[in-house]
Length: 272
Ligand code: MN
Ligand code: MN
Image (cartoon, rainbow, N blue to C red; front, side, top):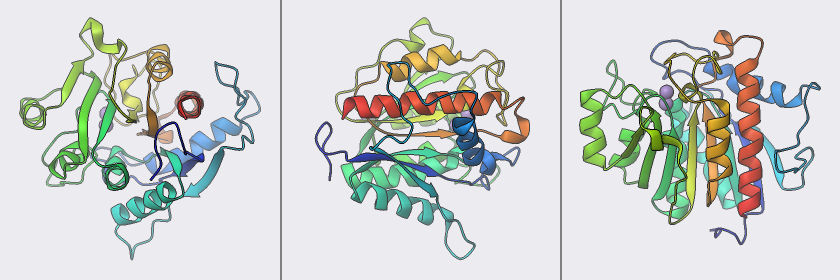
């Protein structure tokens, strides 16, 4: 088990090309390839805002995509891939995929560290008990994670679609919800221990990120997200989910995802 600030050897980047639990549109399975292409595009570079050059960085490894085959349950495959990385003292950045992938990721993290702090940036709470009869929908991962006791403290920022059922769930699980419509939504957060960040790109206003399946206007700017990432202490893992390249315009959302990826990598490296 690695301890924060001591023995994170490197960061492993894992693609999770999975969208079978999307409730509205498919397409997120193409997300990892689109984010990697945006990172590799010669129109930009790999330098972060604090001046770190991530290209061929000795502490960043691309682990490829999680292999998803019909004979293995996808959540088992995802959890196993994450377990393997954590066992090797790697922090991880996973590229989704729809948001359902975060449940097996959190299983692996909690199995390794015990219950962990989770910061969720999202337009939606994703706390449904079930959606359209599916308990593993991308609208449900945090209900499953709480039922399994995987989360210590759960803060949601950017929420602007809270339903009465999900409010009941949020109360039941003790989720700290910072709705988008509150001025303190993006204020600095203090977590007492390691934090896992789950970034659903639909937290952004669709004006900044049209390449998502669920448009919810009134969201964050790219700068809001970067500010949250750059001020987050104790980051030990993250995912960027819900990029749907079929809906994107001129790869602009893929570029936003790649930008967030760079800053997340820099923050994890800076904290370890
Ligand atoms: Mn979500
Ligand atoms: Mn969402």
